[in-house]
Image 1 (cartoon, rainbow, N blue to C red):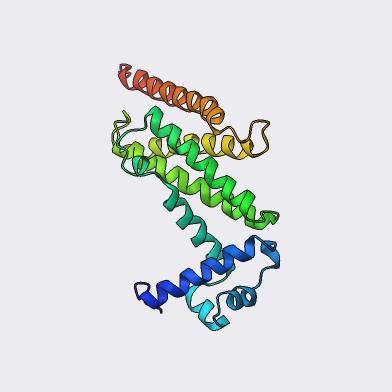
Image 2 (cartoon, rainbow, N blue to C red):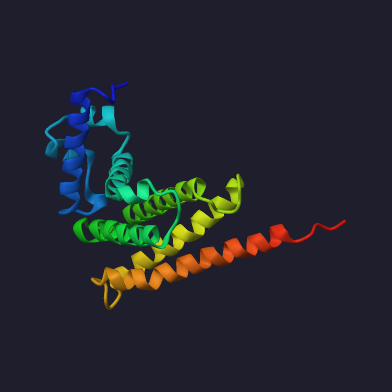
Length: 204
């Protein structure tokens, strides 16, 4: 087992990620082999496998690291899901998807599926964390919060992904103006409806 904090280990993993990113710009994901990655990173296959189980594990790490690097500090530290936080998440998701689909060769269905699912999962988790820190009106009901985060994340991701092929695909501001009201109004209706249910008298 390699020591993940060893500077040499960190450097080797960085070389592997950089080699993989470079290959993704020139070759289809399905066509990239471990040998390709190892040669590009100037390591041997055994060294690659000491760090990653396969190229899918490598893709998973790259996707996650890129996502966390793009999260604005304002979002990471947010205590409440406000209009501005919603704007930031929409813009971040849009930029993230553009980077993967325009810079990398995303013509592999397995790769696109893995990346899409990973992004949606991380986006949902980021939103859930904000809901947990803020006053959601649901107390400690994690199940409700997870549902809200899933719905919100799906709406943001779905819209941002669709925007890749939209007529005004380079106008991220237009995307924000369309999506934010939908998301915030939906959250408002959900919360208000829940408050009505909670305030209703219980049956004898």
